[in-house]
Amino acid sequence: MFPVVHHLDYTLRQDGVAAFPWDKYALVMDMLRASPPVADEHEAPVMPRAWLEAVHDPAYVAQVLAADVPADKARRIGFPVTGALSRRAQRTTGGTWEAAKLALRYGYAANTAGGSHHALYDTGAGYCIFNDLAVTTNRLIAEGDAKRILIVDLDVHQGDGTAALLAGREEVATFSMHAERNFPARKAVSTLDVPLADGMEDEEYLDLLDQHLPRMIDDSRPDLILYQAGVDPHRDDKLGRLSLSDEGLHIRDSLVASVARTRGVPLASVLGGGYGADQAAVARRHADAIRIMAMSYYR
View: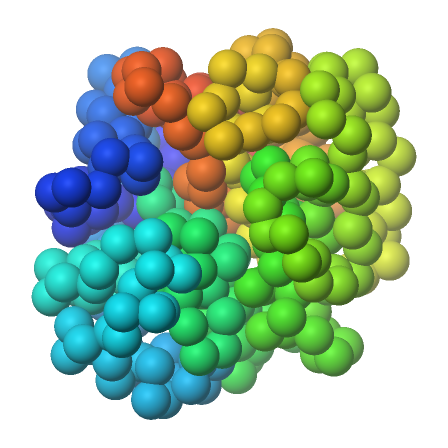
């Protein structure tokens, strides 16, 4: 049994926004419930406003909470922010924090949403409203739950918002492996960025991850790893530019969990990106990632 954080608010649909995979969040949880190992379900809390304002511009937070986000910011996000989407953003951010707390207690935990790594100080971007990774990191350190945190971002897109929001903090390290020519066009500077060529396949990708990840953990000496486990490096992903197979993703996630486990570092994963017309196939990749990490960490 392993802890998983979920909430019905995650499954909200936004009519008229076809590009975002609204259906996958419910499907992921259904798949986790249907197959072992057994998930110990925890309800995602709402992230308090004060912690959102500790990382994001209070004026932007007020706009989101009032569902009054200006049109230019809504365009950067990719959809208008309704009242229901505002609650979802607060809930997914709280879910990442809850998963981190559970990981600190048990070793590994997953949030079935989150990974909104493009959200910046005063605006959202790229389907991201609040940056749950940065908000969670700041809160954990401020409340004394962790002294040092490493954020590992293996989404196909660079974690630009996370890198920008946490830049200059000596107690935080950010590591992003991403398609060099993919969104965002203007990259931020992470502690370590590993840009990847279009079409990269399993062997080269996994060699690079095995080369860099253990050293990042050893150098940063984290009390916790937050892992953005996007499955959009998959070769069939609608918005990806890499060519990982199902097996490649499985090895990737097992490697992350195993390296964390052998070094005694708690690991909390968030869903991240995954896009395609076949939502069941995308959800299966996410559910497989969570199960593989749980089995690799707790073996």
